[in-house]
Length: 391
Image 1 (tube, rainbow, N blue to C red):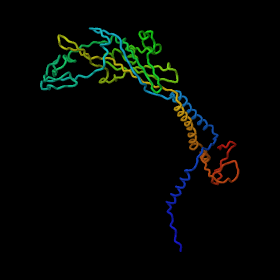
Image 2: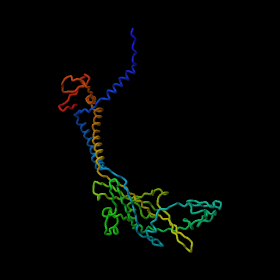
Image 3: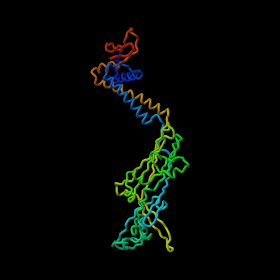
Image 4: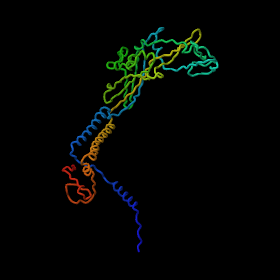
């Protein structure tokens, strides 16, 4: 008797068939099949989607965003400012050397006490007025006491005189000299007109007639920022002068112009951090003793912020965006296919006509149609004279 051959497990056979099927499918070639659907509503949807996509790329991508250009943001920039003007207080005339100062500010804390034991000798408070001597002495006014310190006398809170210098300040002028450079395009420009007839000595900024005269009145800057000058002069504040250089370098250099805008930068609605002030001192000698005048100034700080973007035609971004536009037009076909396969009455017929499988086999005879490998009559698709299947 012959020995019985061992049977292959069913799971292993199924796995083998699946592997052979996947390997065979890997070498298949897929090509689109054109089917003309005579449906006006579907055709309107298809053309409308294509038109919207085309308008988006032509108007927004290429015209508004200028995506055909190579761009550079954040130009290299330098800013130089100069203030001119004089003002008058109750006691003296102030010029720019006295009221234009660099920002130096700190807060002074109180050091109240009841007896000498509350004041530690030699203790140094970095936010105080000096080194404590260990004595508790009466304050300048009132019944309270404070720790005595070795420092400048009197301290700031003890003898202060307030002088308002904002009466003539709105007419102060500020020259803001700005130059920018885009290194990628080797393009440079400044905001001052190159003239030799003394133009800058008699002009002030005007957005239309004197764009390249960057001499601004302080009152104009505050007004453009939407603030009240008198209130701002009493409490202080930070005003930003924003200079924007957006340049289309496909045009001439004269079309690249600065645009100015103004706004307040400090949070005026938060009392703890609103306003702006700083302290500075003036030193002199009286009878051989060194004396100083400490000034706490509330003022308007001007921050100049420069930004911009330059663009110039480049072939690479143009090709990339054109390819993206042409690819996106195919979204219309995808949407209409989804409508046909999902919502149309003949969705099953369309699905059958759209997906067809061809097997390389000997010809069975000549005819006007193409048939699948299965013998079912439904797998045959009639074609017209152009070779396009019609539904």
